[in-house]
Length: 480
Ligand SMILES: [Zn+2]
Image (tube, rainbow, N blue to C red; front, side, top):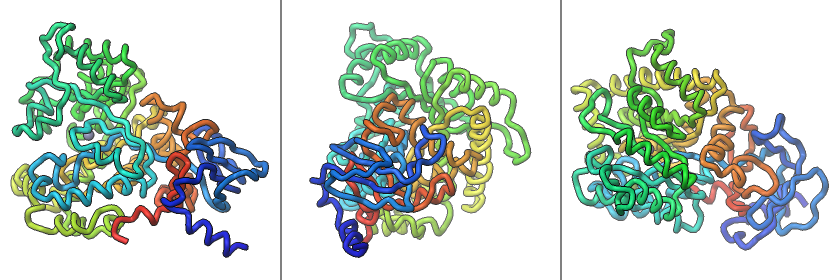
């Protein structure tokens, strides 16, 4: 009997897409709306949703999966991932990717599966550019939400793009002086964005990388107009800002979510407290109930790319096509490392890595820890790939961001919240996502180990449920 049953479960696969009702029997539910894990539950998925959760026997189903000894959680939501990007190459419209169309194609085919491999069933892409269609037209892919970027010709990120191809990523260019009725006014552009089906608006507060300040930012008047129009359209505003002065501008503009940690302040010492002005800023983040995306993998990716063995990471083999891994070993692929070396005045690779992995990560950790001690909800947001670094790979980076949260002092239940319900609430989709409750979309994970026991349990996925359809994790591996 047991043998036959094992055969049945090992056979469900993409071919099981026709199956409508799935019973997950005798499973432990781990979900942030519960005080404690619920043991020995039977969960019925019907027509893509969670139809029933009960301790009673369920007899009507098309497929039964034995959940004994396993853990059922909501699928992970990564609220900051750029699916147009190819790690190590760029946005997919930039020269390096256009020079290697076959590698790019193989990568794009695998990328949605790589996110699913690590249990990511919802993604917010804050800057989709032109290459996201590959993602949503894939047979299976995480549910896709996108923000659209509002910028002007004079402000970041448009101002930094020098070729027409890169500039073509920005569809919603505003003229700050345009009257409300004009086609390129803030009001018209926000309406266009809402009509396009976008889930949010992204604006950049960036006057220059690091300590530089060579670019103007959007005027307070423009920001006010964006806020007003976005509110009418019920679209949250996500701000890119990673320096103190830029995050202060974002706060003043009344945005809903701030992306990126605070990595540029003073000199890091493990035993040193956060500077007063940073604490004051964070207190306002807390008081205004702003969503906060630490995106520690941006910095980790910059540091790790300088490590000689990073391309040989065994984890890459599951999520990165062999052709792309091979390309990372060519001299052509070292262009970004070379840029970092120049930026650091020819410092050794190990010292550059340490500057990121120790000092800046350390500063980000202090910020995360300050917010979490105040019980402020943190959002899981990897900013995959974060830079042209090839150290960040799809899905894997999301998992690593969760591990970074633990390093910064979050408890495992806080990581669960960050990865599920906090994101769902901030992007106003908590009626459909974020917990294991009847009526919600059946984007779920069946884990072999308890995610409240160890962060590594998130890497023990047995089955991913996408709108109720079970997918065995092994089927998603790229280099089988
Ligand atoms: Zn980003």
